Length: 223
Image (cartoon, rainbow, N blue to C red; front, side, top):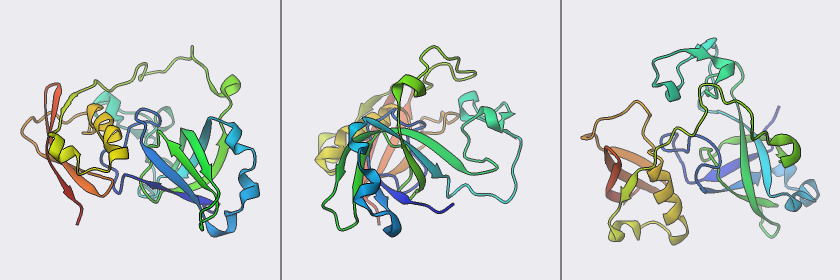
């Protein structure tokens, strides 16, 4: 398989990316590779509110694989079968995300651009395929969810001085606050003295977490 597109997103590194698609309305853009920059290829897609992205964990590719992994949801202390998890460390490093299609831009020199929200993909992630989301068959509200029956995130209170927040482009400020409220740290980190740095939209967001409060101490441009 060859990538048909790649993602342009706010996340240059893996740290801080939402744990699942749709948790935070983070904006992103699907940019097609040159052979696929054809308007006819997306004809009719604007009639759908959501799309499926099939993509590659391109920074988690390994030559070997393990039949069990340690899901962060379980604190990293219990092993589960790799096929019972969404771990990136799989025999084939394939990911699947359902994202909202906000619109299609046809005037770009890069061909049609898909503007999406709710993305959980690192900047540059290769996309292998795009399919429309069909609620009558793709949604199963009463289905069991195994060891992850509910959203794991407990929402934090985010304290960010207005002068720091103003350094972030206005259209991305709320996305950043929402993302921080979902606690971007690994789920087994609990040190209130540890200073974290998260790359977002060209900036490094420095913060600490103490119990239910996340405090932003600085926002600086990435070098």
